[in-house]
Image: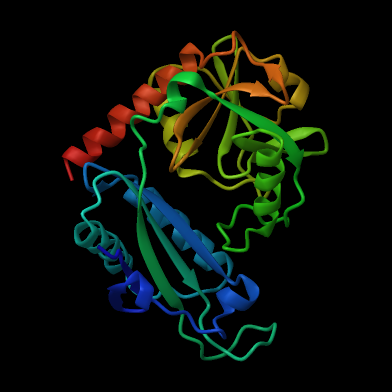
Length: 285
């Protein structure tokens, strides 16, 4: 059965979904996106996603294509129409269709599309084994706080990591880890979670926000500061977070074992806390 996708006001079979060759997202990468996890057939972290999307659109001076409530309703409709129980909804807004020219067009209408993907989030086998990451140079633009669809830098970094046997890449800039290619990055030392503070250098991850809230509630120590590759290699634990990985242990960096080579107790605690939180939100939605 064909998947139903949403594009500019219509729900259509995926093979019928079309994008104009003049869409600025297609030509310039002029747009933003979100990935929202789904558990038990329900969206989670809805408010945080709406807040981040609103900020990204504002930073690029792109208007909302509809109200925030209608935007979320599209996600719910797609979940229902596709019978999605666990996975993600990808949504994207571009500046719209206009003749190719670098300045913002005057009268373009934002384009809005979304689709669902089935994924195994809760019972990811990597949660027990952990993953290997490979460091790679951070060659992206300087506004990484905007969730831009212009992801060529991340594509090149991910391919570099995968070609060298990594499941994820940790990007390096001036000797410091910025973040994962498609995730937030953390290390743990003496029971304290260390992660880079928010700035233009990293994306304000929704899972990062939620995990730090949970850690604070549980009186788990947090240090928001820059950390070096050397610190990461000497850490007791390391982990990543994202919409698709939740909290996932990193057990090897550039061929160096982290801790005892298995996901550590803080990592597993954070995964448990996040799992409980999203399941509670889904059951009460």
